[in-house]
Length: 195
Image (cartoon, rainbow, N blue to C red; front, side):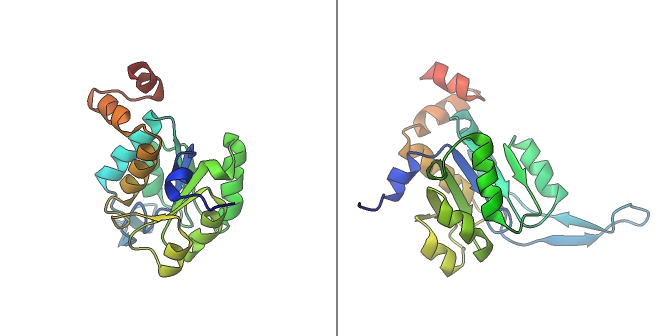
């Protein structure tokens, strides 16, 4: 049986999962001491690209769910994920493959219907199990070798936008969802109504 192309794999995707550090961010973690008298001992900061946020909204409008599976625990990530209405927020995860399987079961989809976007070796287990494994431009070479497709932009610089745009174009949804977004649409129901 011939291997499926990345585009063929992208046509089946119903869920896109992302690592955070190095994928949705550039991988830098800024840690500052908390002000005196604060209940926290430190403040963590990360930078997110606006293009990635727009892409996550476009995916939602197209009926594709999104999620994050990350090893670190960060309130900054939780805030960003809630702001973007990301469906699955899984932090503090060492065993990404098990959580990947749990998310699939919860959504009632197969591994072939899920994409995973990663940059480092901890992302390899779900990348090896999913239908479409995507490495960001700045991913480690071992991760790029395991990927079906690699983004044009680095993590934190629009890589998630590249991944979502690739999938939506493969599914023939890109133009419709962008047109609906420009007109102020915000849901998959509005997209269907405009098609």
